[in-house]
Length: 113
Length: 108
Image (cartoon, rainbow over all chains, first blue to last red):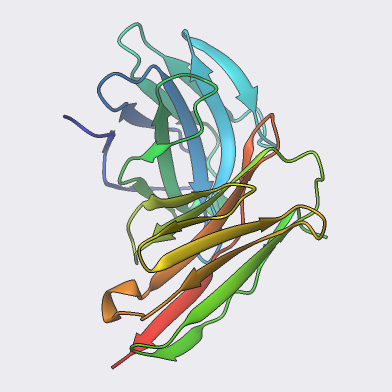
């Protein structure tokens, strides 16, 4: 039973660049949520995707966008990177949008220089 | 006031001791509550969901106090392997809000 997978595991970018992070949900799950976790902080909700649409969104600027594909995998895109975007980006999947038991992937560690 | 607050610790506790932490939340409409464990540089993993009646899983007990708007986690007979950061999470309906976490160090 494949768990949540994310790629890449680590990434280094410079200010102003754009980045795309990828997530494949746990087998049988159709809902993907993205979180940003800065050092010493808890995960902060970015948005949730279900049926290829953004269903809910947290307090993140439009520079953060996403996409969900027919196979339920998802991408997180961040444009015009800022130093403050350096964080661990976590993807979590659930079996429905209303299922609260989230399974997290290992995360992508992004460093913006 | 932050929506979900936790004492960041660290809590330094000798092996075998009992330790408890609380997590307070501000939104009285919050619907469900969780404790996650996060090891250093790893992803959070669900430890327990927290029910109104309280629930227990082995050495771990979680309780909810809706009147005072807090949840608690009690760890009995602590093990070295319990060393981690414990995150509480609150589902307020439109999204799940995490606290910053409480760091626990179990000392040999």
